[in-house]
Length: 345
Image 1: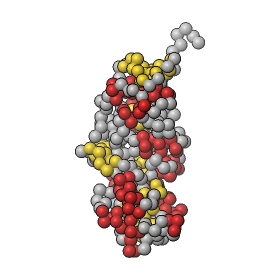
Image 2 (image 1 turned 90 degrees about the vertical axis):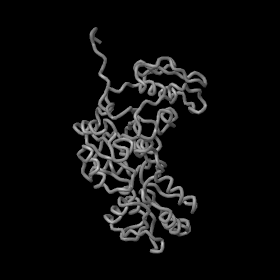
Image 3 (image 1 turned 180 degrees about the vertical axis):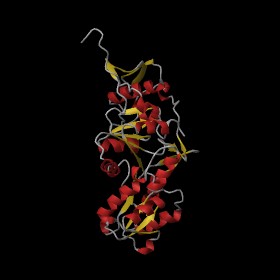
Image 4 (image 1 turned 45 degrees about the horizontal axis):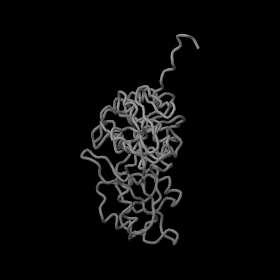
């Protein structure tokens, strides 16, 4: 190596990526408004990669989602949006061919996809539906859950009808805070009938396979704000992932992430998609990210150097804790690692 050779430039999370897939709630927006830096960062990403959106939220159509994103300053067509109802239709077609009557618990997003697929939606178990498809909508009421329970009272192994849930997100971010998501509503039906739903959306693979096929993706990066759905789903689908700390999951969740739910990248916000990403390095038992350094000794997590940025300290802490193979709940973790200056709704 020459005397004045330079070290290779650090790669950004977007280097070599041909398709960027982004979750919506907690990544692009919280409620109707865009999150800081999200729109400009995604527009810049679209200059070098195909940009698509994946959402577990079944309450809206792909066209209405595209309209909302366009109003925020993005350029989005309905075909750029992959929804959990679309993934649910893929599963439903394998179980119950169209045409058939399907009981719907949910909103316009589900109704629209059912009709496009050739099914007849109903809200009543008295219409002898061939299956139940359940997704989130703010207007879902107890009466809707009761109709699903009535239709699903017979176990499937005894001749009962299939039950597909678009997703099982326990929570959903809103402008005023965190609210119950579709998982809580699916759980209510499950509690009543003792059956489990087949899930179409994240963290299951069908929604990712739909997106990869639609966008002809070869080297994909998926951006999400939840470890248990977004990152777990990306890992299962075999694609790279970035967790952005603008939504649900916080530093304490990152440090506790189990194997299989660990992101390729940890980002403060979407500006860091375009910044050199510092890979963690290890010297002896110390894990370094830039000037931040953390190690695990026995049952103690030790901060050797705080560094210049909280995100680097979090990345170093995650690297050390994940490499230790020890569950975080049995470790003594300094409160400093849990500091959370990152934006959230």
